[in-house]
Image (cartoon, rainbow, N blue to C red):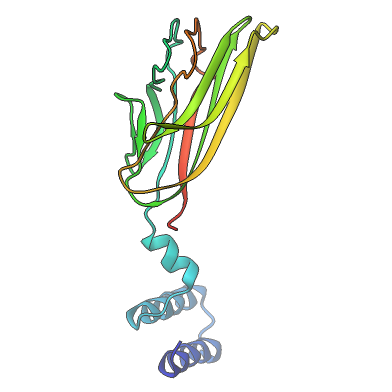
Length: 185
């Protein structure tokens, strides 16, 4: 921060402190004026500048209807969108496409019924990176979760297919996928 900026900010704060009028609305007007002056000369607190200029990406989707049969390598197409900031998730393909470079986090959870054998993998650009699975569980219903944190380039894709054998049933509302960009680097 340059000397000129320090002087402007200091004088503005001094003016606000010494002002004779203690009216709250006048104080708020002066405070807004101070913030605008700082922005005009190119100085802003780092946290405000980073938030305003960031490329936010986040999505959360789930199954509206249970799936009664899933073949090996079939992509789960989560068809109900709650959030899709950045428009990266496509309900038609079941794939997330990174709209910008960054580090992303993905989490998926799925529920099956007694005796199911399910392996839902996390794939990036055609390569399976992580696995999550259930094999012949004894509970009436059971769910499991997978997670992946990975650096992606703009245009890279992430999806969650059934990565092993045929699956008889996956429950709807308890099966979802979330993702968001953690950082730009």
